Length: 97
Image (cartoon, rainbow, N blue to C red; front, side, top):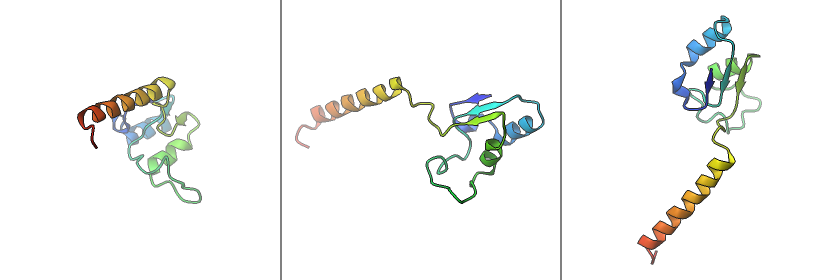
């Protein structure tokens, strides 16, 4: 299973069970249910607040990345270009702001 879309697309308890029982060969996850506040927080010395994520990270057949699948040259260029277009549009609508 590969999930780079939304965490809720995969039912995490069912995924963990399938992996532990050997009914699923592996998983590559860029997103997971309940990831908010986890991937970009400094959790050194503390337990991961999402027990499912902690279990998945210990599995040798699971790869978890910190919600960075969007981070490509193309996506970044789109972000820059869209930001410039939006700024120019704002300026043309509100020239005295």
